[in-house]
Length: 252
Image 1 (cartoon, rainbow, N blue to C red):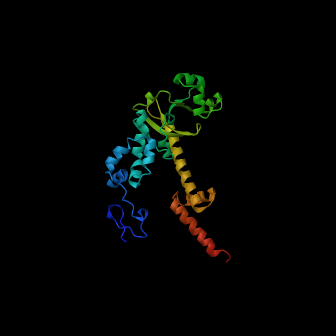
Image 2: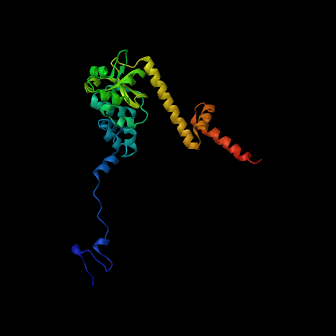
Image 3: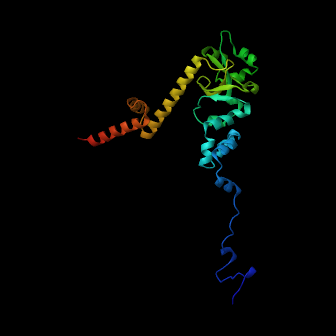
């Protein structure tokens, strides 16, 4: 007997509604938009309007979005937008710096002068003494005498409007911040120190990369970097050649 289901479709002994092919899914609008592949300039115009946390999320969507969302200019624009900062000069240690676009990422630089005290500096900038000490990693007021400057947390974001800030790692405060200078830019001494610090940081990253790649200690990594003039690839090749020579001649 030929049994038929609703609509006249034949249903055999081994057939059931569950065994039938599932209906085609509805097109996903988000996937369709992704497949459309926005032009790079239009995609950039859209993504650079996002707040930093959403910009970080968009970098995980696809390669095209990651390329735009990881671009230095796009990251800087998103970082500066909430405070009206015109420009940020310098490269942070990692891109995570850009994602934490809070007011705490900015600081004002105060050059310490004879007679300065923490309470006096706090009064001048209308901030709390405890905030200055915490921001500068100070245990007591006496720490001011061993420093050339203090980082002052920003209490009035209006001073950042239209400003240029400089990414700096302050080793006393043990924090990386975008520093605002009332004078407009850091002194030559400060710039020289910042450049030296950035160079040391790069050298340390290269040393760490070679050490991990070759599974050797810091001293050995530093030696092979020195004889290869700081080129990590050449350093690893030198080490591999020496290791191969030792393996060929051991026990002879």
